[in-house]
Image (cartoon, rainbow, N blue to C red):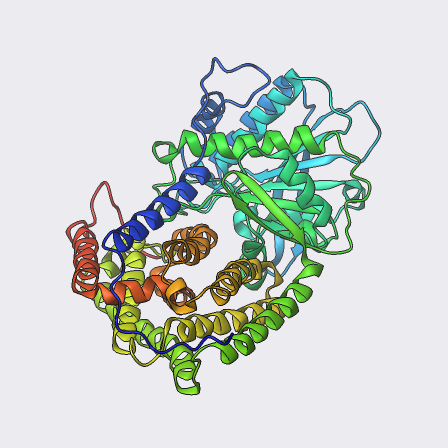
Length: 582
């Protein structure tokens, strides 16, 4: 029997569904952020074999008393303290001095620097694991977070490691010099042929003053490393998109040098509180014990897990696609990406063919369903850009650090999202009777399919963001196809909630990290992607379009409240200093 569908009248959703959907979205985002938050800081009474942020903080207070850039007297004092502490820990520190000409992509001049290398001897003869951070600071600030927290975390990791059962591999603790001048200590260290015996490296950095410690960079062919990393850590915060994006950025760390020498490794950092980065605010008052606990637990997990693995061959035939979800790291081989893309493209074509036979899919409605989200993305990007230029001119500009970090930037980013939502709801309201739910959903799925194809080619690590929501949406469409009234089935609360929550579940963590680490002007690029996500969430957007009389005003009020908070706090002062570019 052939089912013919006509365009139904404008049906109102159940009175409880719009509010339930909004509350569910807030709940999902809150759960994601809760699972990603740093663990509670452990006290000095913590068992000796575990990491304690309070114990590590004693070191930070000694290291970050004042700025200690390369070559300063304060830097020499910090080095003397670190050597003393490593001696007390039984690491037999090797103070490696370099005085000569050094040519890198950053400098070509004579330099004098000192790396410090300590060793925890293992019971076996396998390749060592290197834990690394840098102990110099920028001249502008004491470097409490960048990178005294990481240095202190490695000292506490060395203490906790030795308090437990001996590990098979040697653990090297390397504190490099001159990182802020251009990775100088790392360049000197990894140019030494004897240091290429290292089996694996874990580097620890910071770009802020609080937040989760996330793993944002790996070596190529990371398949086995990711598998072992997922087993090692108890609270992973990472995804393969971060690695793919980081490769496109000009930023470097000491691990960059190691990777250039063909050594495998992982990079950890935290980035909330970016306004303190490379400023006098990077002091001990702005150190988060919870963040240091997370950074330190990651370091200790690396030591205990990889310290008992055979590190002679961590190479893999390929990378893995991975992402954290509710405290777990899910992963699969990147070589599956192309096959997944082809299968999903075939499913989309099959659904279009099937619905063209059994429903009232029309060429006009399908084009409207495809072009409307594109138009909405263009309009919302333009409006968000104009809004940001206005905010920046009126008050945000004077609250921006030389690094580009802006106070309250998260408020502005959420405002851009709300602007995008308003535009999509308004345009969807306008075309309610011109395109049905099916045409809108298939149009949104086609745009996401294009993003999947593009990511499979350019950024395979990002492909899961598009593949998983598409799979869920295709399941919903296939189910609707075998019901008596497919269009009515797409209004079902289960369809509305599922097609809304799955994309949010995957993208919430991404946008949170991007909004923390990048300036608001760059966040505008996210508006286009958010627009396409809303296109995929068309059942929910159509529902809000039918409830526009309260949904749109509520979004406007939220924007006004968010911008009002930013405006009322836009006054530099002792609690919110703004520094001039040097």
